[in-house]
Length: 347
Image (cartoon, rainbow, N blue to C red):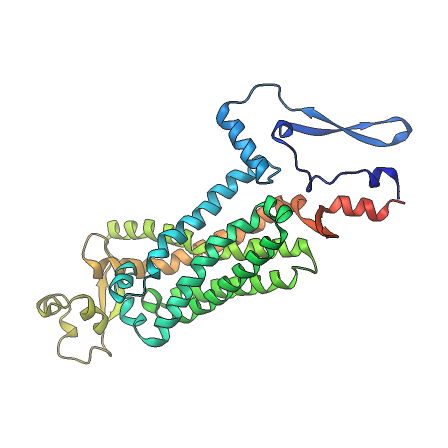
């Protein structure tokens, strides 16, 4: 093996310090035709205090690119924030959880088959969502490999099982509209398949493992984007004022216990078998819970499909742009691909 390969220090094990984050390698041609590199400063200007703090934190966490910490803070923070915000639904008291769901959902979820799967879904996906961002900290992968593995197995278990249970309750989620069902089923399949493939490649191909784990977490987080799209769409269709969703009469009566209100607004639901008659409910966020829930039903399916498309495109673009960050296993450490290739071909 040549001296060049044997003396090379992998940057993944010894990441750049904050003082060298603004330096970049410049190729030089030395005597004898061999190539060497030197560090050249991009700028000699002094950085402000907040920027120095940002660069120091980025270095401590093991990030090499200057925007990696920002990406982790924005997208990982959104996932953690959403999980913490939805953790209030972990209270199994019917009065508590029904108040946190979309009005009318508890009408179906109180049935045993849906109720048990709902709580399994809530608990496991909340825990998995809180643990997933930790897997993408380079410092954890380098300095706490055992913790990275244990947390990774826990995240895989939580997200795979949690999404299977979530797919079961999708039959009645937000009224069980067909476009909502299909959106949740597709996301569930994508998360589960990505998690299984990520587990399969964990010791076979670290590069593929990273890609499938990124896909799994991105697909799982699509529900956050869907909620944002849904909230915006609800306000839009409220302003338009001509959108409706279809409700079964017993669902309507569940949210309108006053017989006079049912008689005046939904006379077709009076004196009939309420489980076999449907009525159109106006979608509006400016009226009562029934009409607000109708707005959610009218928009959630569209929001899910838009969010799924955005997350598929987004994660594939990110994987493509960060291909150089993919690493392969060399002994007990992760090394850049070019380091391994140089080591294998040098003699």
